[in-house]
Amino acid sequence: MTAIALTIAGTDPSGGAGIQADLKTFSALGVYGATVMTALVAQNTRGVQAIHDVPPDFIAKQIDAVYSDLDVDATKIGMLSRPEVIEVVAAGLKRWQPGPVVLDPVMVAASGDPLIADEAVETLRDVLFPLADVITPNLMEAARVLGEEKAESAADMVRQAEALMRFGPGAVLLKGGHGDGAESADLLMSAEGPKWLSAPRIDTKNTHGTGCTLSSALAASLAKGMSLPAAFAEAKAYIQQALAAADRLQIGHGHGPVHHFFAQWEDA
Image (tube, rainbow, N blue to C red; front, side, top):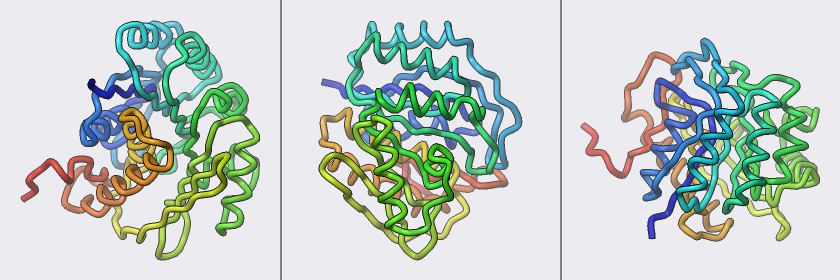
């Protein structure tokens, strides 16, 4: 059986984030990738220049085309910029009842450019969080959803993850990459309680697509039938290695991408 993962997200024509990063991650981890495009984003390693939203009815047609034909084992959801887009994706999930759903509440690009309208944050929280098996916000996204300051300590992260759980997701993976200190600590909060995974913080400017990649790695691992804790461990190890190898790539003139194919490519 071929493991299949679907990404529902926006694009990145420079190839480091969004749907392009998701497909690279799926492939690197041995999973077949399918796509539903929600927005065409003009961006590169320096920032976001423009966003062209895909009409909601066409997003629905893409969702139906994939789920009606492919046996999707896991779904990763990324950039959904408007309330009507969130609503149509939620309706598609209810219509097809797919396997595990990983929701990455993408709100800001690595460059700092906003990727979601203010009015869409509440819709995302109230409509889509309850349909997700796991949500994967970073520290800034968690703070924006909760209307709080960014977590500055492990205790803050636990408290905010518990608060996010009350909106209905099955679990919360709170990504600590935007924290401080020598260690990058990610927190998985579920009904079984908190689980931490830490790794040395990698000193590189090539961090474009890090959040998309970790979330899609989690979805790929779940698509292969792993438990959530095991998928968390594999995804954390993958992004750590992709970051460690990022400086082997020289892509663009801003924040370059992580190295999705560190294990497959023969680098010069």
